[in-house]
Image (cartoon, rainbow, N blue to C red; front, top):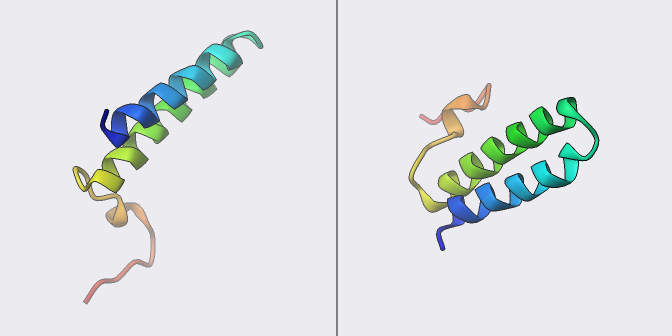
Length: 59
């Protein structure tokens, strides 16, 4: 299992837990799932998130 897929599953598990609290928590869980997937993909080297960090100047 890839790291990005594991991050997605963790975020979706949080979604199931958060969905018990209502629709707002469901949206938050989906957002966390997307963040988990992005971080996992970054750790695998499939995407580069360093461009999103302000002040990150690589000369």
